[in-house]
Image (cartoon, rainbow, N blue to C red; front, side, top):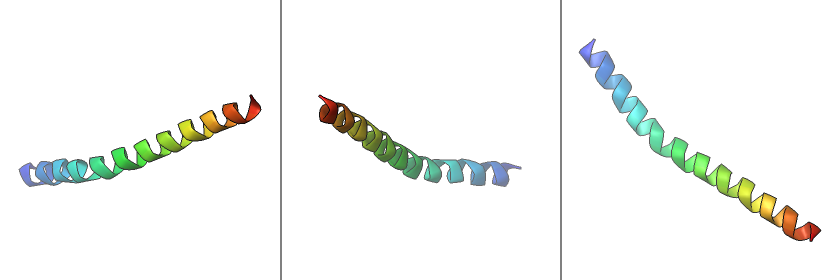
Length: 42
């Protein structure tokens, strides 16, 4: 059980960074598209 828990925590630790990076990239792209859309309609 301890080995399994260790594996799970290591997997979560390594999966967190790419998830945050991709999530931040998508959020930035959505905000940029929203601002460009509003700026285009002004």
